[in-house]
Image (cartoon, rainbow, N blue to C red; front, top):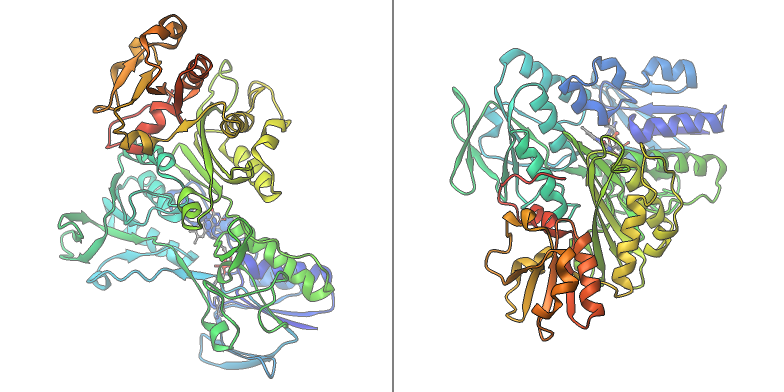
Length: 555
Ligand code: FAD
């Protein structure tokens, strides 16, 4: 069997290694148009920032090590330019222009994605960078070392944009972040992104939300960026991180069937030609939560798909790819931001009914030193099935999102979260883990023990029959975030004795710092015949969602 692999990084290199483990006698050729194979693109921003010291640590294998360890022929600086499916041939062009026609029995496409080609007028004259490869990274580092820029502007507030923000700040640059949307990390909901906005501002990053760059004006002595709102931004370098588009040119040229957003494959990663497989950023995968094809340009899915495709090529076995639910995490200075599944925007556009809960927890037992805050948002359907989860926090975010991702993948419900038995000792967690707590609160909502009132409803509230009932202590109530609305104040510990002050014909929205005392107040009111709802996630969540730049400090 002769197998040709196009693309030599995450998907391609993983498939090559798996193929060799399964078939010692196959001839395996891996073709890569760049200079490197099997490198950690995910680590590139951290080498720029200096956290990953030596460049070699980013490179797992070389063409030589592939040959020595795995007997895989690697051809770098070689581009696949066409596939003749009827003849089962792929046409390869080397950097010296020479052409080779390579026949195959099976072909694997792992060509990845390329940076979204954002057009900014005048940018061709300016120091503008993107980050996808080791040479991209080296260009950025060489520019910094040579010209000692003081200011950088990043365009795009996704994972790579935020990682570049952090690492350029670490390098000592003043950084502006320009984002077209009104929030960073659009896979998260606004109240979750709000903490990240605050944290970026605390690190000195200038955030320009709902803005875009119209064109690059003068270049010297500094680059002048002309913004869509008419303002100007001065900078010394521009990094574009506005997402990626799948590399589908080769597949389109070969006549393979394209899906809605990427190369179409079946559950065994076969394209419309059964001898041609495709994996990674270039393909669309089935999202079981919305029952639709999506792109998941992430390293984990690319690696798993590559293994399955290799298995199917050699063994023809029946291990199917189950689709993607978009589990992801990123570091933003001291914060970790993670999400899985669907957010509110996606659920609304899919027309799916849903409920949500927001819980503020500590990373481990509060009485043990260095417990740090985290916020968990759950989205679930009216039957309780978990549809999405988002977490922002300073410690322990990774393990919680992984638990939630596993539960979503397996189709579990919020009541299953209440039943989870998770490892606990004070330095690591709590007897009621944040994941259990999220489950309890979601279950309370489902069982109608508490009706949540969202930050949006609070922001828009103009019902004369509804009152915010602030149950925080008087000392905590220095800020009333609901300036124009009716707000009463009765601290929780006084509530039972002051129920006579309340009006049974009104609705009370209980308010506290993070939603917990509000829940207790809500239960007291409901059991005494009042109509009550609880501000979901409390004042802190409301402030994160509506923050206009004031400092909010997590407890
Ligand atoms: P790639 O790994 O990009 O490999 C594709 C290769 O194919 C490229 O080297 C390309 O040169 C080559 N190629 C394309 N066309 C041809 C052709 N015609 N002929 C020959 N060769 C060709 N994901 C995460 O999950 N977590 C992270 O923290 C994370 N951080 C990231 C940070 C950065 C800066 C970047 C760029 C990506 C990051 N990713 C992260 C995404 C992750 O790296 C990708 O999802 C993953 O690499 C996709 O694997 P792939 O094999 O599909 O494509």
